[in-house]
Length: 314
Picture 1 (cartoon, rainbow, N blue to C red):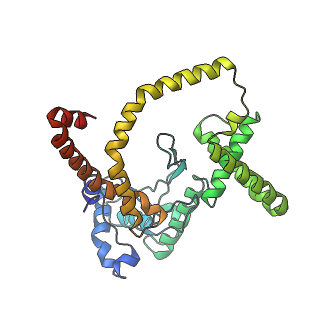
Picture 2 (cartoon, rainbow, N blue to C red; picture 1 turned 45 degrees about the vertical axis):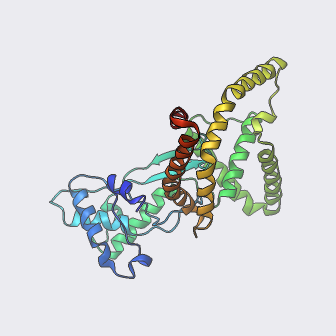
Picture 3 (tube, rainbow, N blue to C red; picture 1 turned 135 degrees about the vertical axis):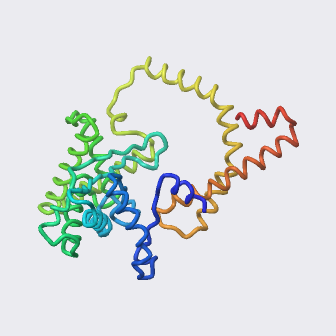
């Protein structure tokens, strides 16, 4: 009821996964009818083929829905109609860090029904073959580190390599290529010298933990700072603090109540790691406006109209 209206505004279609449909495939009949009509008209369908959200940098087993949509649209389409399947990989860097998180969208070459390996059009073999080809195409587009801990360590190694003067390709796509090569090297060495590699990993983990605790980067540790640079930094940050502190305190006062309420409510909602952001969004859509209304009413009663106007502007 909270997020559904926004999803419908952007044309989202509900999908009943096998565990939710109670084994009744007819519940998705309307979905496939809508996607077939859209694709035959030259439209596009965006689908996440793993069938679930998950935070790990690894490709999960793909569902067959994407391949079925392509084959169904071509099977009932006018002669000569072609539908393509465009694999898109998403690579995230610090996605949970406000204003610093970023994502690379890596688009691969399209797949067609010809990639079904010659199996009869619409058959289960065609669906399986096309799904397998899609999995290969997606793996070529993403950085499969296996788990988030390994990916974070890989980023730390990249920072150390760069701080030591090692060449890092420019551009996000080129950097991801470097990370993929480093990951292949890691797995190769892990097979040949497992004890040595595990020892190095433990050292990198300890170093990364120290960096996080001190809020420093590898590049900052390797840099020399002249007294003038330090003085200008202190002056600039000090002035920003003096000017911004009153505004920051007002912002904290206005938002601490809905912030804490949202956190408390989400803690009591059973959820997995990848569902937490959705739960926070849903709870915040209700709790923030309610808290603002309550605070605005309190300011109006205590300080009058001008104080309420200042609160709203703030």
